[in-house]
Length: 100
Image (cartoon, rainbow, N blue to C red; front, top):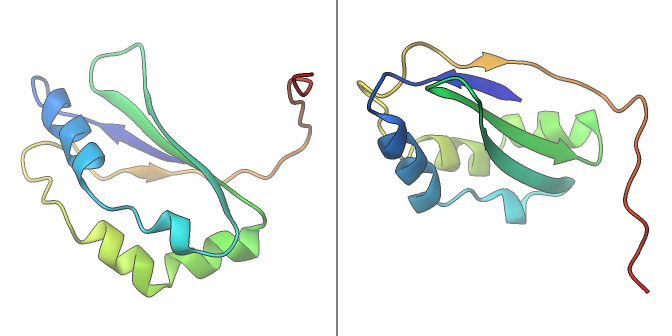
């Protein structure tokens, strides 16, 4: 996860940048899911990805797709600081039952 703090009044610019960029995630082995989460506090966002393994995630961070995906959008004046990265591994997981 990457936690972002967005400058007041720039939330729409931040969301637009994420919606309009190409992520390249669908072409990376081991990618499972992405979500951009908006927090309850103004300007609070998290980008959340799920991977089949830590090794798959680490391979993504050194890939050409990573460089291409992260070099598309200038965030000058939008971000209130650098994103804060947090990495987690599944300790327990539960899913909804499959629809019949």
